[in-house]
Length: 117
Ligand code: SF4
Ligand code: SF4
Image (cartoon, rainbow, N blue to C red; front, side, top):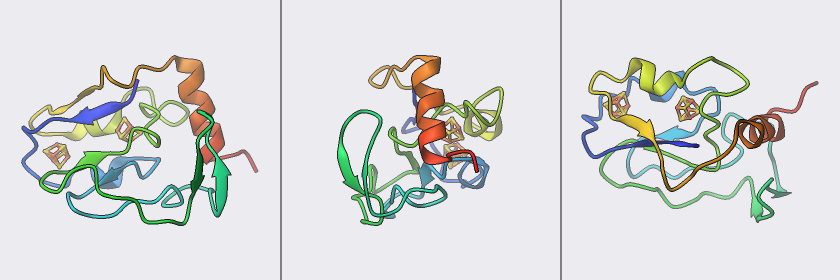
């Protein structure tokens, strides 16, 4: 399950540098699959979607920090717990019921974005 940032976010920015997948962006900023990952050019995501990893994507939110569900692994593969939730001063990084995934799926996403050398 991905994590989502609720509208209680105070835009402090503490979570962004903690994300091992670069899945967190400031409101109104474009995002890319390639940011902070090994992805480049045309790729097929684990969910079967074809995307261009280099292409700028529309912000998920224009007002508050946001998390890209396709890039969030709930920190699986890197940490024992979601790092954004651990540092957020107002506890607004919560499980996203719209993006429920198994641990295996989350680890698969992590390996896809960060293949072992
Ligand atoms: S749970 Fe981890 S991977 Fe997901 S947005 Fe938060 S810090 Fe990034
Ligand atoms: S740490 Fe919490 S309050 Fe601060 S920007 Fe991230 S989600 Fe918003």
